[in-house]
Image 1 (cartoon, rainbow, N blue to C red):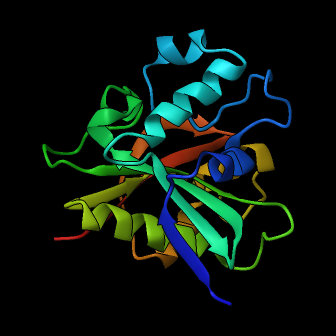
Image 2: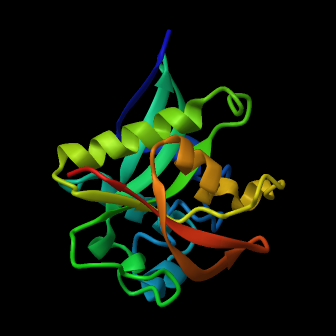
Image 3: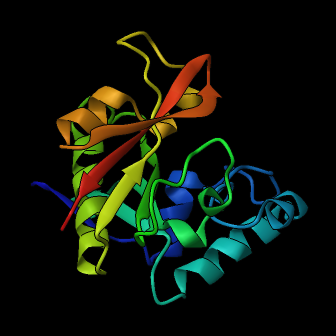
Length: 190
């Protein structure tokens, strides 16, 4: 069966990919760039999952999920940049006034990595944004020049991943992750 990517609307599937093993744990839930920093820092334990549940009820879901048959195997966070902390991020430049979409997290479940699911997620996130009128999709991966990226920081992706997906480097950023510079990559959908 092929990989299918669809909007993230199922809380249990999102929890499988970005939630904690214990409900009271303070894991990211992919909220760090999606909600204001003060709110993100104030949310703890189950309140983090509750906030994700709210985001899943909004008109535009907070991302996409990849499925291999009925099994959820991947997650990508994608949303209007204006509705993320990237809108005010001093290290990630704002290049123009276009209503761009940001793609900032690509996560594949252990046991499914290295099988091309990340490429399906990027393509699915781009399609999701295009269907909602995005003129441009941006990503902020590390430029690791082929060197190994720590798995805890690999969620941003690598420049090579986004090159393969048709994105081009649009700008350097002032952001560094895991010792690697992050670059602003863009895919024009117009």
